[in-house]
Length: 409
Image 1 (tube, rainbow, N blue to C red):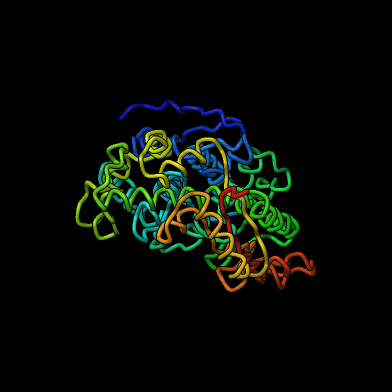
Image 2: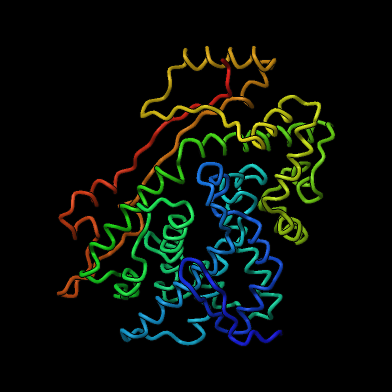
């Protein structure tokens, strides 16, 4: 192993982050992890917020830093955490997003068949565990919720996990959307463990309200921004068209790794049957799509070339976002106009329009709850623990419908 000598990374959000040991340094140096430098945290959101150019690499390191702070805080409150558990938890959060493909969530179910990034992350962690001779055993158990002490898994994945504490603060910083800023340090210092569950001490209840409020606002202003939704829909349609053409014998130039994914409908079983599929996926990042798009805008297929050109030139589809589904008569009339203008047949029109629904749920009260530790030592769900109407309102799921289409006038 290469000695890291307590290597320090300068992070724009937290300042100096120290890599704690050689194993974690070697994991960060591995090509599987380095690939995250080329995958933007917020996909196409930089088309709306120009500063949103930060990557999954940034986020993973930031999450590791916050996990260090959380574990130190819990230790200071008398919670026993062995050095092995400490290291395992840091590795689990460091690798929690390693399974993301190009543009993060946008293409999650289009380049591959019904495989979540979480499942691919497990495959990557298992492979790295083999590479490092079983040194990731504890991290893998924590990551897959197989470790006997459940609160470690909650720190990695829950409604108040370290992942969310970093991405809200980081995404707020890089987009410039100040409403998303949260006091992650105070929240971390308010965490405790009761009955093997992560709880928040009662004096931190207002910090949690701010956290949930920030999450709700960031979804509407950033993650579900209507222009971002439209751009992502265009990218999804573009990949669907590239796959359709490739699988029907049309030559669609692409980078080698992307070419194979266009040719095949790869499902989870293929990863399990052929270890080389994971290595192939590990070669993919945002640049494969952008680079291939530059070839596609010259393609003879008008849909492939049209969508590529529009994305490269930031000519995003118009979009409406409403509480009710658009009237079918209005949608049909608009589709007819699009079909006429872009000379599409009835089988092609769906590539040039998009529809669906988006949901915003800051807190899912039916899920794994955020629990408040009262001064009397009992635990209670955040919704019941507070008299603040905002928290109760944020536990309701808000769904909106959208329809997007290119310029027709």
